Image 1 (cartoon, rainbow, N blue to C red):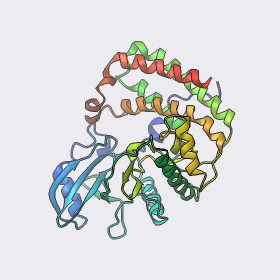
Image 2: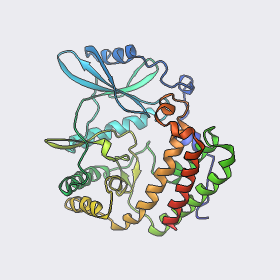
Image 3: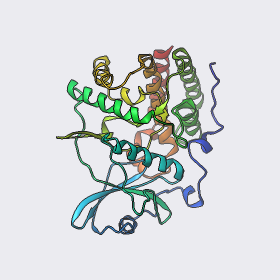
Image 4: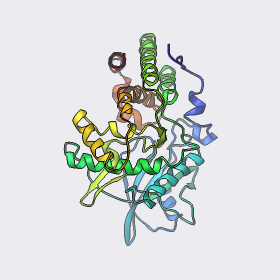
Length: 337
């Protein structure tokens, strides 16, 4: 089996850093009350007017906060224990570097030179609110525009490497999520063997595909470039949410916007107007898609103790869903073999 299959090991320590005592509670956001959100904004010298709107976010907690005589701000409270301070500051620095180069990215606000803020045991950041609508991915014009923007984002991303945010690889996308599933009560006991076999098979197929493609250039990515993280206005699109920014191949930021070969070609037509693209990376797309699908189940399993997850993903408590997930893993392996 290429490169082996690592189930356990580094999962808890690598993807999820050592946690402070308050971070190990079963309810990570139990003390994040509306009053604390308002206090956090007030601690930055902003006068909140009491209007709070919880935005759709599971990994973190994100609020739109009304400000007296000014535009609202977005308050993002980071999930305790997921990223180190150094990793969050790299996210902020990347966002600011992009904004400084006129790549339309919403960067966090700084207060007395600090963008990573602390209150009540939580780490948080404030950002200006930028609205918009989802891109029309059926529009070739918009796809080419997005391709050009991603080329500009990657030109900045290629200048240096992340030191603290890790790499998109089989450890983070397969081994760690598999360990989370096997350690969870969600996966029925009678399916453990079937799941393990499907995951091993998919890991071997992904490893073989990565070996076949060979080394590709790694750069700083958006990392989670799906349509929900791109907002379109009359002035054009802008990016939000670098929470999953890490090192990886350029194609990772393209494939989630491409529903078929035609849309991928439109993205690349725009991209290559401004930056070269290694077309060998296209062969990585099935492997990247497979890793993301396996990781999704592991993410739900790892976060199940957070009340937001059973409420949002109730299907994960059903044995039938896991049967279907195992079948999906085998189907994904079929496409790679």
